[in-house]
Amino acid sequence: MTHLKEQDRAPYFEGVIETGETIKLSDFEDKKLVLYFYPKDFTGGCTKEAEDFALNHKFWIENGYEIVGVSPDTVDRHVKFIEKHKLPFHLIADTEKEIASVYGVYGKKKMYGREYMGIFRTTFVIDGNGVITKIVKKVKTKEHTQQLKILLDL
Image (cartoon, rainbow, N blue to C red; front, top):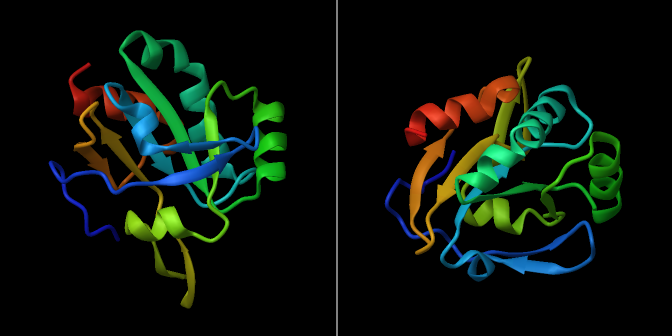
């Protein structure tokens, strides 16, 4: 799990999004950012989480937040995921797990007695000064917006 704590500076990141363009942390200077890490496009929990953010996208924008998802999927897979679920926000293709590693959300996981390397579903809320204001490690995928609203007092 992540070594980062609330009030830490968010680690710098740079990644390729579904358009083939690169975005980086400094692109969100003076903006609030919900940076969420998830394991894989087109899986149950990941789809529910993305759909929740999409359904509530207007709320996030009206409250001054940008949403960006990060997973190890390829740009092409992100394009298909965005098109199928009509996602109005960017997804970073972290195929080498560099961003996930810097944020401490890539590591050894256990399921059904088997160990493997994977992404820990985690959300970081980052303010316009690049400071982490909230970290959610136990994400409620179907109602993540509601979960964040309560945590952020929105």
